[in-house]
Amino acid sequence: MRNLLIAALMFVGAGSFAQAAEFNPDQRQEMESIIKDYLLAHPELLREMSDLLQNKEKLAEEEQRKGGLARHADQVFRDKGDFVAGNPKGNVTMVEFFDYNCGWCKKGLPEVLSLLESDKELRFVLKEFPIFGEDSEYAAKAAIAAGAQGKYWELHVAMLSHEGKITKSTVDELAATQGLDMEKLRKDMDLPATADILSRNRELASALAINGTPAFVIDDKLVPGYLPKDELAASINETREKGCSLC
Image: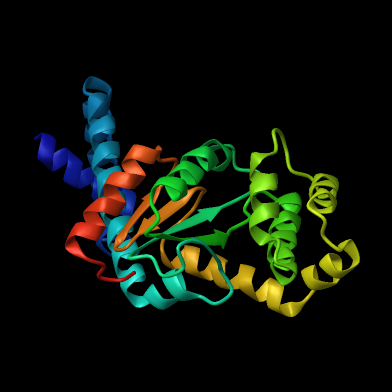
C-alpha cells in the first residue's frame, strides 16, 4: 500500500494530463480521497518523499557537475582572464568561485592564505562570481581592473579581509589605500573585456550547477560551501597522489 501511494502521489504531482484523462471525475476524486486519508494517517510519508526527491536532485546535480567539469576543463583551470595565485606551475590546481560580500568566503580567506603558505606546489585560480548585487559586481570589476596595474592580489585580499559589507565606496577606499591609479582603474572597470570575464564565469557556474559561494574545484571534484584548511589539503594531497585528470 505504501509503495502504491508513493507511485500515485508521484503520478498526480507530475501533472501527466494525458494519463489523467483516462480517469473519470468520480474515479479521480476517489483516488485523491484515498491519498489524502492515507497522508493524514501517515504524514511521515511526505518527509520520505521529500528525502527521495532531494536525493534525486542531488544525484542529478552531481552528474551535471561531473560532466560540466569534463567539458569545460580548460575554462575552469586555464582561462586567461583569471588571476592565478600560489605557484603558477604547481602540480595541483585549486579553483574558487567567490563573492566579496560572501561571509563564508571571508571566513575561508585565512584558511586559503595559510594553505598557500604551506603548500608551495599549489596553483590557485580565482573566479570572480558576484552574486550579491551591484556592490559585489563593482568589487569584482575593480579586482579585475586592478590586475592591469599588477595589484589584483593586493586588492583581492584587502576586500575579502574587510569586515562588514563591501560597498562601492569601500572598494574605492581600499583601492586607493593599495596605491592604485583610480582614474585608470575606473576606465579599466568599464572595458568590455572586464565584463566578458564576469559573463564567462557566470555561464561556467551555470554549467557546473554552482548556485552560491564559495565553491571549490580541485581536479574533478567540485565542493560547494566553506571548507577548512585540513579538508582542502586532504583533497589536494589525494589529487596529487593519484595525479591530475583535469587540472
